[in-house]
Amino acid sequence: MRNAIAFKRYLYILLLTGFIKAPLAHAAHIGLEPGSTYATTGDSISFDLVISGLGNFGPASLGAFDISVGFDPGALSFNSYSLGNFLGNIALSQALNASSGNLGNAINVAEVSLLSALGLDTLQPGTFTLATLSFTVTNLAMGAVTQLSVLSGPVLADAFGAPLSATSAAPASVTGVPVPGTAFLLIAALFGWLTLKRR
Image 1: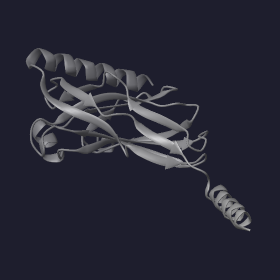
Image 2: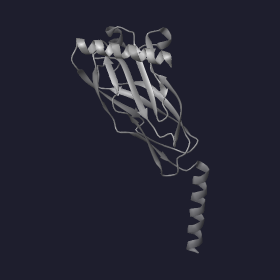
Image 3: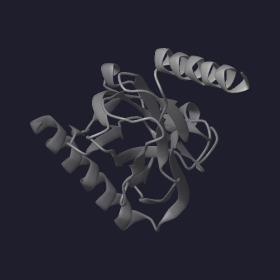
Image 4: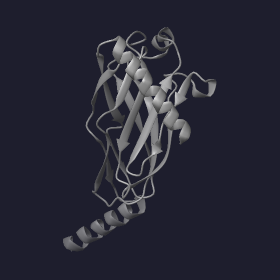
């Protein structure tokens, strides 16, 4: 936790330095994929936090981010997150993990790249995954819907530390469906009822 706080200070110093050096540049789009899915209580599900709208193997590239994704802890239990490698490999000290992780009703993921602007330009396509978030469905009735959304105020910086503006996609949704055994029983009951009705 102490390391995450220190990394976040580094992230904001990087952003402040970039803000002094350069005006607001480019606009990124942040969303969750899939945009909708179906699940039943007990299922494991995952969502990719995806960024698009920047350079495609060229400027502007993403140098740092700090994003929170909100969810309903009454319907979903957070399991884990994993960061992508498009800001550099953390294990090789090419990037710093500054994530706070599970905040109760939101997941915070944050990363600062230590690669050069050219290194980031070479590494990043136009659209890529920032992180993958994994959950277990704990309480979702048939037909009920729960949502995950990118919370307002994501912090993004380009390869030089200049701030990037961002728009967020509509929330992703999870809709409850019956367990396979229950669905079979419902279909069998309906078939039986229709058979009796015809007699």
